[in-house]
Image (tube, rainbow, N blue to C red; front, side):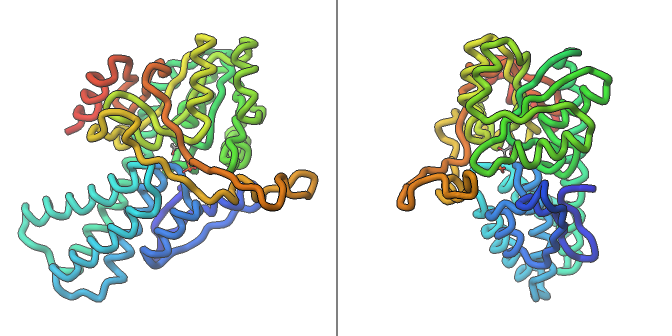
Length: 352
Ligand code: MRU
């Protein structure tokens, strides 16, 4: 099953807030609901957020009462702004929405302005195309990345970058899945990934489905396993990669990369080229989402609150791993090695 999909004129998605305890698919008919679902992390993971926003734009087309082309395009642009504002860090959100609006203008330039209904259908077809491409791109990346994994490797993985974080197959976890399917004997140390526990809840759930051996660790344990020589590779994803190769990903990735680097363990970020933002020269320019402190405080220990009643907390959702800590960036067009400033632009422009 895909993580997000179109069915009976509705956008459907797996509710990732309640996994692994319950598996439920939720349906949406309105773009504002979809934007809310992205903000509330019913769906999360950069590529999955992008695909959800693309289908959200298609819903906006059908919600609009416009009968003229101009009125419909104006409604679509207004809905696009609402969808793009759902979360700030993952570049795929804006990339997906902008790609569809740009394709629409190219389509119209080629054949003259379309009627409202043909535009509605065009937007839906483009969203479907984007979703289908995501799966194909992930499988291409997985082939390139699996070649970096040796038989017998123990891999530390951070957050969730599997089928749940994309339309299907996954990015970094897709690489691990393909290595396993190639018959390589591997073991995964799954960072639980506080505060929302995407590792313990979602990555472990996926690894169970794929029959891949794993153990969950708390994020502060990875340094111990790296120093003890008990992990040979580190793989994680990305929400936005700057032109110089600095990678924004789930909070904790930077600390993990530092510990790996200190122990000469290679660190790979697996990234579709849609997540590479050449408009930003370095990682310091990437907007970092700060989420509700209650995500940090709102859990229990032996059924009791984990902090004093009036405790305050911070909750930056992402951090930036500087390019110097990365051994390579795996894309659908191959593995990119330093100097990233030069080599990243090549793979991004390869398809255009
Ligand atoms: O806050 P989330 O769960 O959306 O963060 C997700 C991540 O950081 C992933 O590693 C990233 O989006 C890549 S998903 C293929």
